[in-house]
Image 1 (spheres, rainbow, N blue to C red):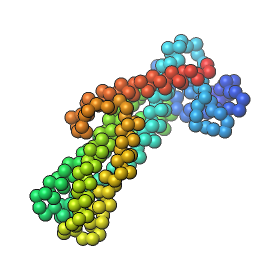
Image 2: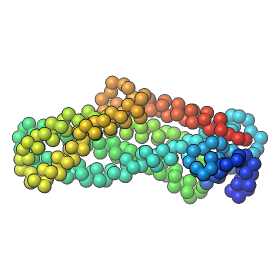
Image 3: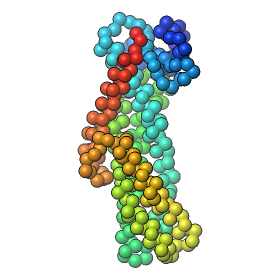
Image 4: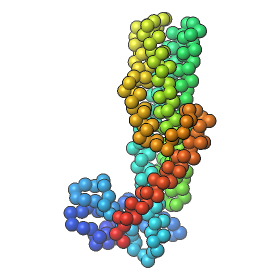
Length: 277
C-alpha cells in the first residue's frame, strides 16, 4: 500500500475539525510494511489525538501492540534524542577548546602548591565532563545511523528499534553523571574563582577576566539551581547515594534501563488507547 492510498483510506477515521498526517517512514518485517497515520486537532499538528495502522489486515491485539510499539520507539526515541541529546553533543568541540585554553591559563596562574592543588581538582573535573561528552557522542552515532537509514530507505525494522532501545538508557546516565559532577564541583570552583579574583598572579587582566567568566558559569547560584532542577525533575530514579564517577556508570545504567522500559510501556498504552482501527 503506497502513501497516496493510505491517505485516502485514513480519511474514514478522520473526525470533525481534525487533520491527519501519514508518517513518512514505514515499519518493515518479513516482507510486510505498515504505515502509521496520526490524527490531530485542527489547526495543531503536534499533539496526537488518534492513530491508525495501514494496511488494515486482520490482526490480533498483540500484533497491533507490536507494530505500534515499534513506531512509538523509533519516532519517540529519535525525536527526544534530536531535541534533548543532540544540542548537548553539539557543544562538545567548543567545550573542549574552552577547557584546553582555561587549563593552560590555570597552569600559568598556579605558582605554588595550594594553587596547583586547586587547579588539579579543576582538571579532574573538566576531564570528566569531556569524557561524558565523548561517551554521548559515541552513543549518538548509533542513533545517527538509524536516522540516516530512515531518510535513505523510508523504512525501519525491529532490529533498528532494538539498537535504539539498547543505546537510549546510556544518554540519561551520561547527562545525569555530568550534571551531578558539575553540582559536586560547585564549592571547589567557587574557591578557585575567589582565589583568582583576589590575586590574578601571572595572568594578564584579559586572561584573568576570561578565567573568572568561565568559572562563574560553573558555580553561581543560577547554575546551582539549574543543576538541582535537572537532577530532581529529570532523574527521579537516580536517588542512589552515588558520587559522579565512571565506577557508578553500570549501577546507574540498570536504573536508566528500567526507567526507559517503564516510559516505553506508558507511551504504548497511551498510543494504543488512541488507535482507531
